[in-house]
Amino acid sequence: MASPWQCPKCARKFKNKNQAHSCRKFPLKNHFIGKKDIAEPLFDDLTKKIKKEIGPFKIQSLECCIHLDRISSFGAVYALKDGIRIHFASNKPIASPRINKSSKISAQNYMHSLDIHKKSEINKQLINWLKLAYNLKE
Image (cartoon, rainbow, N blue to C red):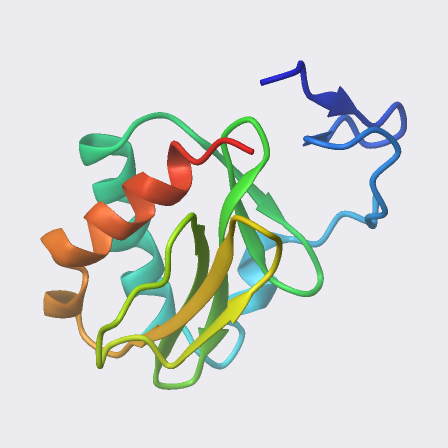
């Protein structure tokens, strides 16, 4: 994989040179306003498990969502009142009742979405899917 392009303004890294993005900073805590009881603890548990079972990554808080970045984004998290929504990519379709939506985003990759409402749903299956996304190469 080629070296990632780094935006000279915000220092975020991307797979593609001059990739469209927002440089605007957004405080992480703002995602959890009115959602601290459920969404924030789920997000904390998810990020701890990713660090422990997959590897190091950065949290990029954007106005739209929370990106989980390695070389570039391997996942996105959205805080919901009753949980969190996770978007992640894979190089194959995933057939599971847990997946709310799947879309083909390129000739080789798919984007998947699922919702987490309780800690027990952050399980080995989810971690394995996120590991695929973490290691995905174009």
